[in-house]
Length: 127
Image (cartoon, rainbow, N blue to C red; front, side, top):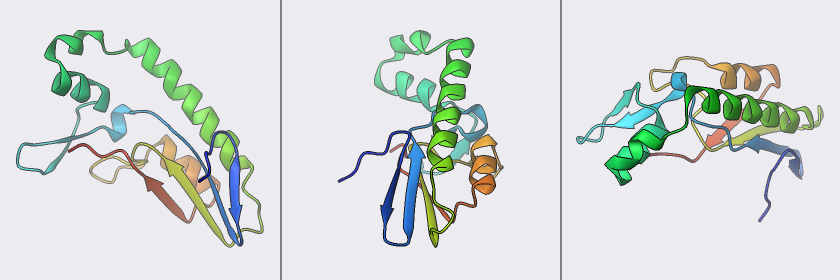
């Protein structure tokens, strides 16, 4: 098991980098009761409301969210800068999806394009 935080893991010809990232408005996903994906609700808001309706008012302010998002983009860039040019497969690991529910490109996907990422694996899905 490897923890990736502002660094890269090399496994043969495969190089893996990434960052936790954050919920960006352009990549916000939510799930309808029928199980279909809908864009437009921020994950932080959805989780707060789903777990405790009274907490929805305690979600980060837009200024706080912007600060966290900028930090996470910087961390992603720092990690991907360390990917070796010689790697035959370049993988990015992030917590949140790098594109919108409708496939819309984002800052995240643009950074991944910039660093010639072959595969992006994300792990944050709502039930």
